[in-house]
Amino acid sequence: MQLADMIQKRQSVRRYEKTPVSPEQIAQIRAFIAAMKPLYADIQVKAELIEKDAVKSLFPWVTPQVIAIFSEDKEGAMENVGFLYQQLDLFLQSIGLGTCWLGVGRPSEDAIFAAAGQDGLQYVIMMSFGYPKEALYRDSVHDFHRKALADIADTADARLEPARLAPSSMNSQPWYFVHDGELLHLYCVQKGVDKAKKLNRLDAGIALAHLYVSNMDTFVFTKKAVPERKGYGYIGSVRI
Ligand SMILES: Cc1cc2nc3c(=O)[nH]c(=O)nc-3n(C[C@H](O)[C@H](O)[C@H](O)COP(=O)(O)O)c2cc1C
Image 1 (tube, rainbow, N blue to C red):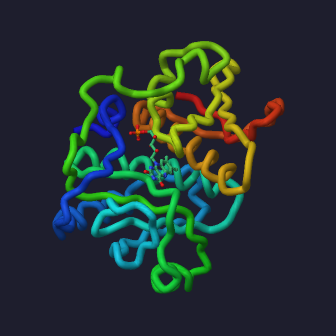
Image 2 (image 1 turned 30 degrees about the vertical axis):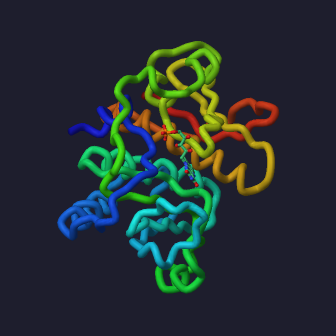
C-alpha cells in the first residue's frame, strides 16, 4: 500500500493488544527508518526501540514497545523530526499497526542514557505503536476534525488537502501556507511556552511529510527570505 493512501484514513490509536510487535515487523520497521527522507540531511537523528517499563507516562495504553526519538539540537531539528517520523507513522499504519505520537511523557533517565545520551543527542518525542484493539482507519475523510482549507492558507488550495489532514499535538493544526508563484511558504504558530513552540514546529514538519509523500517526485523544500508574520515562525518553502 502507498503511504499517501494512509493520509485519508489514518487516525491515532489508543487501545492496543498487549502482544509485542513481531521480530519480522520490527526488522521491517528498522529498514524503513533507515530509508526515510530527512528535511535536513545534516541534522543527526536517532530512534531507539524501548520497552514500556522504561517509559514514564500517564497514559495506561502505552504500547509494549515505544520508539523514542533523539536529535541534535540545531535549527530545524523539530520540523526535521516531524517530517521524518510522520513517514514512519504512515508506514506503520500501512502494515496494519496502530500508532500515536507521545508528546506527553518521556523515557526514564536510564533509558535515555543507554539509548542515545552517549551521542550527545537530545530526547525529542516518543511514538507508541502496536497491534490495534480498535479501528485502525477512519471510515471516511469526513471523520477528520480539521480546519477548512481556506483557514490554513491565504487561498484555499486543494493541493494542500494532505497537509490539512495531518495530525498535530492536541490537534492544534498550527500551520499556515502563503502562496508565492510556484512556492508555498510555510509558517507555524509560535506562541506559548517553549515546549508548545517546539511541538508546533514538529507539527509543521508532519504537515510537510504529508505533502512530500503525496508528491514524492516533485517535492522540493527550500529556505527563502520571506516576510515575517506576526505570531508565526517561518519553517520553509515548498514546491509540490
Ligand atoms: C507531536 C504530537 C504529539 C502528540 N502527543 C500526544 C500525547 O501525548 N497523547 C495523546 O493521546 N495523543 C497525542 N497526540 C495525538 C494527537 O492528539 C492527534 O494526532 C490529534 O488529536 C489528531 O487526531 P488523529 O491523529 O486521530 O487524526 C500527539 C500528536 C502529535 C502530532
